[in-house]
Length: 136
Image 1 (cartoon, rainbow, N blue to C red):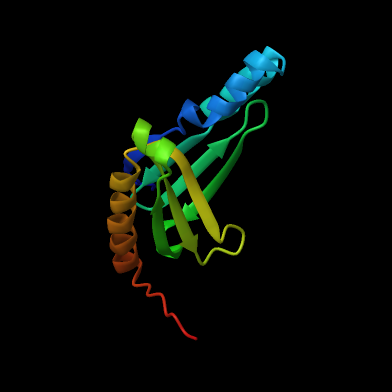
Image 2: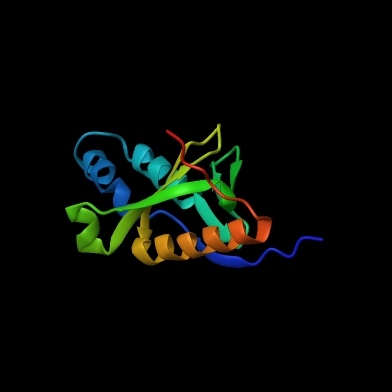
């Protein structure tokens, strides 16, 4: 039985496409901007108490799961433009072989999301009795 609880769900902001939108007005055809908008709109991050699920794709959907106990470290990044719009990036460094680095880009209140992930990672590690050993 799956008793996962959704803790947070979000999408990247369309502000990440600002350059593309401006270029479409000046140089590129408008369908290009519409495609970029669709790609961004169809990217969803779902954080549960057990995993982070990233779903992408317009016609073909790809879902990637990251078990939270696999997260080694995290980082919060925020460019000047992102600060202006209240956005940021959360970067997760993992022990997962297929996704050693996971980025949640252009999300609202990214620093709070990072703290939520950090707390959930610790809780999940305690529940599974898993510890990460950093050996050099």
